Image (cartoon, rainbow, N blue to C red; front, top):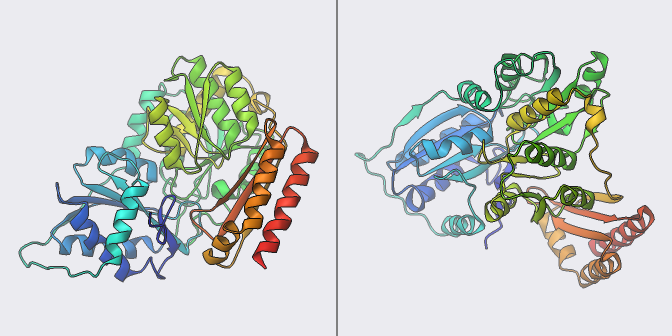
Length: 448
């Protein structure tokens, strides 16, 4: 399957450099016009707050309309809203222009089917193959698509929040929100204020260049400090496109994604909302999470790393709760993909109901000792050479055998950047550390 352009979640790179150029996006739109937009002849496009978003939108829109495809401009909205709305829009597909938690220089394209699901590996490979072929577009003067703008966002979340929470359900709670200067900048603080919470809103003034800059889910220092300094109950941080969440308790302690998955499983189980008696995480989640979930009498499943794979496993197991350690939380009763705002709402409702401080609730389980490393290299070719190395493969197999029954080893290529991620866990911290050092040495030698 083609992987030169497509990663685990679409195409990503530096804006105004291949493949995120005007020429490429126009060509891509023409290819999609022929291969995907053949039924309704209509596509929806949304974006986050990056300065390059309008440029890439214009290039895509030009390509689509040149082939007679109508474009619905959704404007700046979060990724989860784009995926959730898509089935209602009578379009052949949607495109979300975003690089998620990356800095403003980066951008990307997430491809969404008419049913609101991310493109599969097979669909991505087909598009990549079509892009590799010589393009001979036909332009008909009488077949030119139109561009229509629609306003969505706050109204959707007001309605969805009303389905989950009663009016003023968060009255008495004091919450710090960090919108990452991204797509949730207007929506996130508004919704929580609308539900009665007292809010301090951080990083909610996007200017095209400050998305994710020292803020949001990847940089929670200011969030944690603000919670403590103002004696607030909770801190909520999202990323630039709103599909990732990190929270901190009233003491400023950052709560991991695995702990959030554990809490959602507990909440849904206790409120008789859990479907399939199942919860899904990825192989990258801590082994302690699976142990905790099973202790609740809930079936625990893991998928490959990537939100799309979590969702596929959720559909397979008929679960409505899943997530990634990185902060993507999927509550499929309310959204098609990870939605930071709705996840935050559920957490706040649970804390309010418990009448406990967040620090008295988290952590719900003790993680296994783990060694995690992100090894960055100059290019994907170097990474491919390392991953194909006989010595590295042998080392991984040896460690896997050594940890069998009480630990695990994960070595994977990032789908969005030239990074090898490795994670080794074991009930013994000493064993995990020793195994990690052995593998790091082997990888570094293979990189020479």
